[in-house]
Length: 213
Image (cartoon, rainbow, N blue to C red; front, side, top):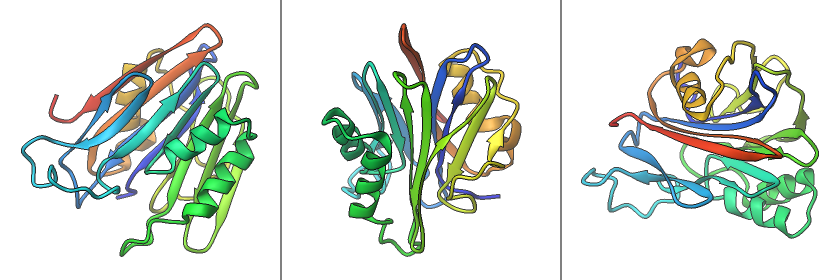
């Protein structure tokens, strides 16, 4: 099954909060994820046909964090949500206002904008999405070892049944591996790259996966 990009939020077996992102692509497979400071960005692979493109659908920030929040998304809405959180907006309001303002991606597929949010201070997780016909922003309840997910195609709206029950990852590298090729995610085609973040009030760790590594 092809589901496009994947957002995951959940809890490790130790109870630490997780944000994860995976690019699956049929049209633009020549992409990597790179970390620069407290942000991760999807970029075109050097020397590829996409390297000269300035399309925001090919290159964008996918994960940003600070000592309280982590925001993960499939496009240019990552930074605006993060900036609204820094300005004092509540998570629901930050996500909803940005998604409504930007709307879905106006490409040939009306690709939904999807996102996840981790709030360490409140020990809470959120998922949000906007499609051509709907808007959804909800807090997500997961137990340790669970990862809730949404995808750009097939599963764009947060639902209680979209929770992977088999997350045994204890570090960010294992989270990248899990969302790329394990459990329910092994059924989703065309993985390209992935990023992950695990955090608690004592700090955070990150990892990336690129198919050409």
